[in-house]
Image (cartoon, rainbow, N blue to C red):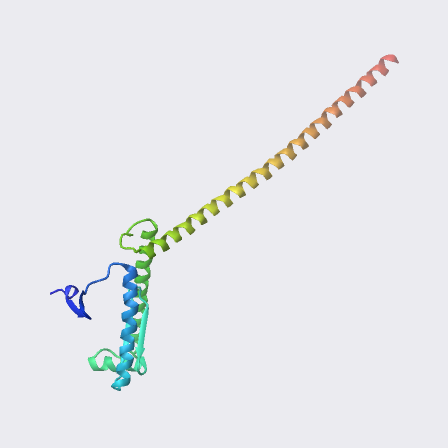
Length: 203
């Protein structure tokens, strides 16, 4: 029988043990049950003088722990009891380190892929109102940043065009001035030449 469909007595009613689909409700339940479990582990270690080590990993990969004694010592003791390799071995630690790194990278990739899908409007049916509002805020912030960047580009382009237009006007004025100087020079040269010819004929 599938354990996810087992009915368990809780208080006065019954609750169906299966995965909570709503992310917000799932997180709230996780926080409550986690705190209760950590409290029970602490009480067990005090009341019964037991050596207790508890590790809890959330669905996002965050770790929570309780240890009545040194965690490493308790874990090493457990590994010896069940015949697992000695974790103090450098080679074992290297393998464990890279395995942990790979798992962490996989979790990060999955989280980022899920966020990208949400930002593109995909796979949002399972999101609750709180998650949808947060996603909406993120989208609004993203849109505003895009618009701000567009306005900045348009403004910079307009400024560049104005500067270029001013440079062209100045260059045009300079050329007109130079042309006028050349024309005036040609007229003066022509007058001098005519005067010289007149004087020659008079002689």
